[in-house]
Image 1 (cartoon, one colour):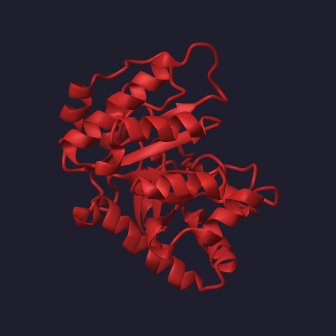
Image 2 (cartoon, helix red, strand yellow):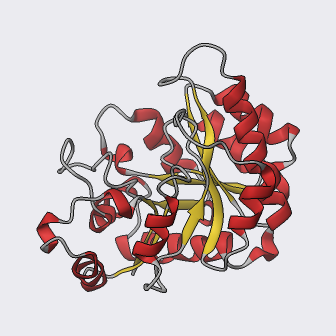
Length: 261
């Protein structure tokens, strides 16, 4: 069984499933996708996202606002805590920093990131962190805000092993998406080989970033199998071992909070 640790189920194309979300969920179960973590991008679409997945116990959610979203409500720490108290919410985010898509004075990104970290600490729920071309500030803010107290995951990892080591030292897990299967993703592949067995996750980030051989096409949680297969090749192990280990790691991070710093 596999767990897709990061996907946006309210944004996938349901055309192959006759437009019915339940058909998609059944297809995922038939492909031995044990669980899918549905990630929040903004609070405007959050209620509809929540209603979509609420009937399914194997689809938990997170709450948060993506660092690239600008025309939106920017939640306070208190608002995030209120929403995050829901038992279906198992993490805070996705949050973080992105200097690739946003320009100018990005202090607003920094403040939003800090609000999410503070809310996660009050809730004792892990952070889902997005970082792109902002590695130094991402690590610095995580350190300044004491994010190691709750830990979390650097999702869709695109950095190098040096960045991964710093994140691991802060009690974070490293999650690998379809990007790890790309030919030009050498530094990501190196990190995937070196990350400790008890500290990695697999994800799709669907409907974005489909793995090889579907690169450039709509992505689905079912394709997490291709990520796991590639990870198994990199780490010289079996797909079953990758599936079992990543599933254990997911459970440890999000449900068994005893291993925290």
